[in-house]
Image 1 (cartoon, one colour):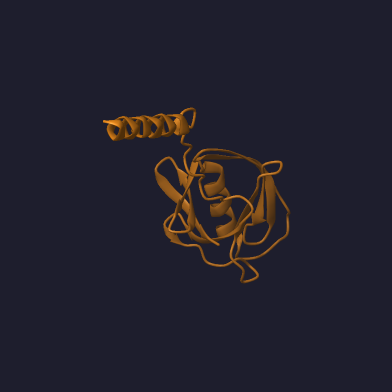
Image 2 (cartoon, one colour):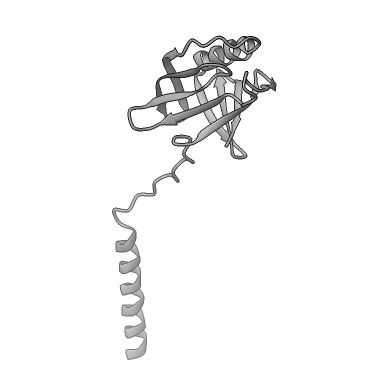
Length: 143
């Protein structure tokens, strides 16, 4: 009889400890993989291979959390501006750009900056950053 009583008390103690251990704890979602602080290289633009800029380099995008600044290379000129990122929603503010002349790179640059302006959200898929306008992928980048 004494053994049963001790076993019951031990079981009750364990149950109380288990309940107390979980009390007040909240599970937080796993942090999303960071897209900020990475230089992303443009590989696809509007469903087609993006190609290279005037100097043979890919267009790029870097999002910097401090100051929510966006910058990169558009195929000839460098661009800079602001962005807002809330969850998967991503919106670029007005972008400024250098004004160098690079014959033959204006198609990439124009298409790329239009894609940035149209962006409404982002997602990471298999380590690649995708920018979307609604449900359409307008640009895809890799590290």
